[in-house]
Image 1: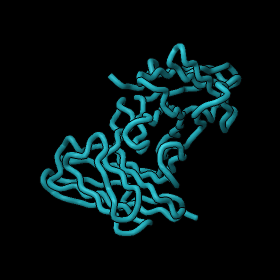
Image 2: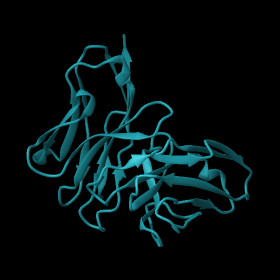
Image 3: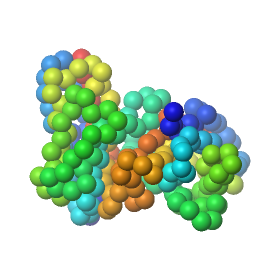
Length: 115
Length: 113
């Protein structure tokens, strides 16, 4: 079945530590790939996106993501986490069938940051 | 430039009541979307619109209706509210489909009791 999977529901890291959030997708053709962030009580904001080309994508707030076709993965990374990064992170895809109109979200990973 | 605005922020409905969630954007975006967010489930697409007068169903359209009479507004109508519709509702817009960034409103928290 077509799906977007974020294996980690909650992650806790210390401030200054590195971070990697996992995302796997299951689609016949590689979809458009996105990471969104939702701060508490807020709407979602786009961090970065991948369509094609260079498999390492830079985003806002110091985040980057690496696309690995062989693993059907699009993991989000940050070298040094700040307390303000505490939020919920969503991986999302736009499948390349069905008119490119539908953004399909994973269940999300909630990030807590210890001082 | 207010972006995407939603009203109300909170609402409590009784079972069987109806209401309309309002959404407006001032970015002249063609595409607008309604999502619901349930705990641990991510966001699910309810309906979307590719322009004034054109709407289509998303993943979870049952129990909802939409209309798009102008580029700016995309209201979501709940008829005969049910407890299963308790959720946080987000409206979003984008300039085009697919590859375009979606801009989200702050959400409406709806409780049906």
